[in-house]
Image 1 (cartoon, one colour):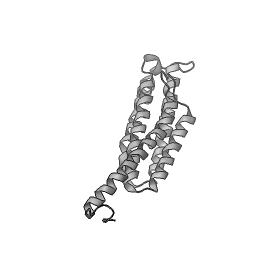
Image 2 (cartoon, helix red, strand yellow):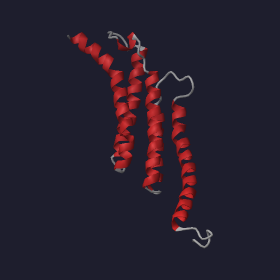
Image 3 (cartoon, helix red, strand yellow):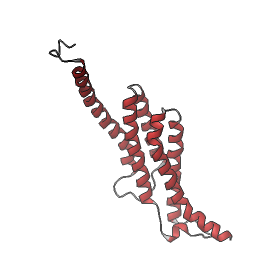
Image 4 (cartoon, helix red, strand yellow):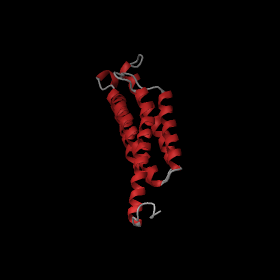
Length: 178
C-alpha cells in the first residue's frame, strides 16, 4: 500500500484512510439526519397547533430504531455519532411539544363539565412525550452504555417536560382537596 501511495509512512496512510472514511461518515450522518427529521417534519408542520398523532410518534421511534440497527453494524464510532443525531432530534421533539403546551388558566382549571380544550391538548402532548420516552428508554436498555449516556439528557428533558405539563393541574387538584 505504501508503494501505491508514493512512499508515504504508515501514519500518513492512516491519516489518508481516516480522511476518506470521514467523508463517507459525514455523508452517512447527513442521511441519518434526513431520515430522523422526516417524521419530525410530519409531526410538526409549519403552524401546527395540535399534538402529534400516536402514529407519528411511533414512526419517529421506528426510524430511530432502524438507524441504530444500521449504525451497530458499522462500529462504535459511528454508533455514537448516530446517537448524537438522534439526541438532537429527540431534543427538538421535546421542545416542539413544549411550545404547544397550553399555559393559560383554562388548561389548569377544574370544572364539573367536559375538559377544556387546553387540557385536552396538554393530555395529548403528555401522552406523546410519555410514549416516546417510554419506548426510547426501553430501546436504550439494549444499546451500549456510550449511546445510553449520549441520550440520557434527552430522557431527562422529556421527564421534565411531562412534569411541567401535569404539575399545574395536579396542584389545582391538590388545592381543591384541601
